[in-house]
Length: 137
Image (cartoon, rainbow, N blue to C red; front, side, top):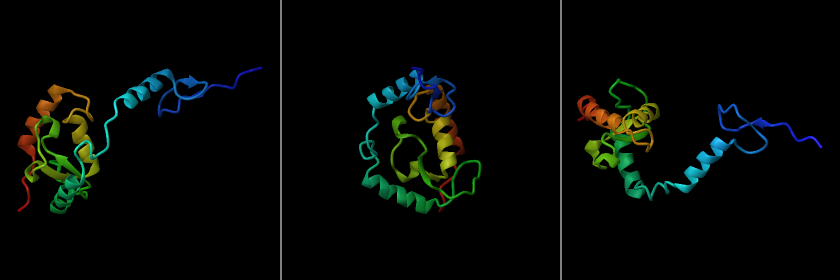
């Protein structure tokens, strides 16, 4: 009896054909992420206290404070110096950014969502220290 035709791997952009499920490459990636869980937002330090600080920062910075001068609404609170690099939740280390600029900063300066790239991180921290816009009065 003939077997069913192979289908594309369901991962976006993957050209591999599979009989079922995902290709071997994407199955390995999923197993890796499952074996290294990040924990809930509260376990990562973003519990009730963080939500209160976040609300204050978004009220203080209703417009994105990216150095390029974006005029979009702030939706994310950014640690100017990331927690993992010694930054704190102090208001002077926080700023409101639109989602686009926060994602860009996280990717370029903070080491791509947890994947370390120390030369980029150090250069980014030094650059941010010189270009961060002053807090409004």
